[in-house]
Length: 213
Image (cartoon, rainbow, N blue to C red; front, side, top):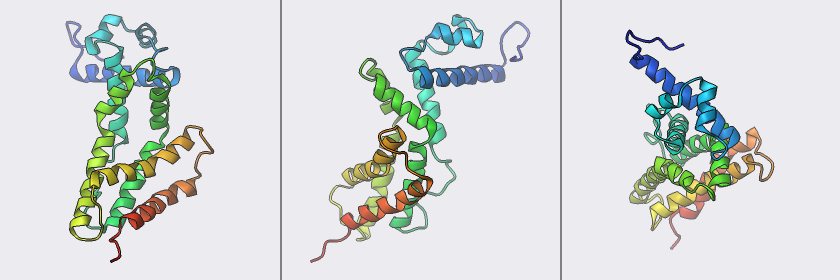
């Protein structure tokens, strides 16, 4: 049980621990039961806390879901000390980045979150907005477009719209493996997933190479 200071007020560490417990339980309930079927009453009962304690941290279920999504996406991001784009040619950089994006996209929590949003966004359109606000797709698009911009300036590639190209590259990396991981076809094998970034980058760069005169 969390340690409590005299006077009944929890310490900062205990408060953070309680917040993590809420997010752990909420993540499990959202991903297993869906947004609509998850209730604050059931969550509070599972955690053996009062709803007043819960609402002190999260004003409503939408705010709780936003916090759950934020934590999932933060955990899927690569550590900040991993060099993504330094000291390598564009092919190597894109393969490295594609592998990281793919591994995150087909992770169990990412698939469960994607399935939840797809299945319930018609009834709860705010779920898609919450996911969009996290900006993971936009962040990846900007990073890839920057890589392509540098390659264009170095005359390694010929691309008129690097942002559009970055969006298409991201779709090539993620769309089919994610669909198959969700059950729309057989999931990719470990060998297929290992080779996918290289194959995508090879096809993409063949389409973006300098045009023959």
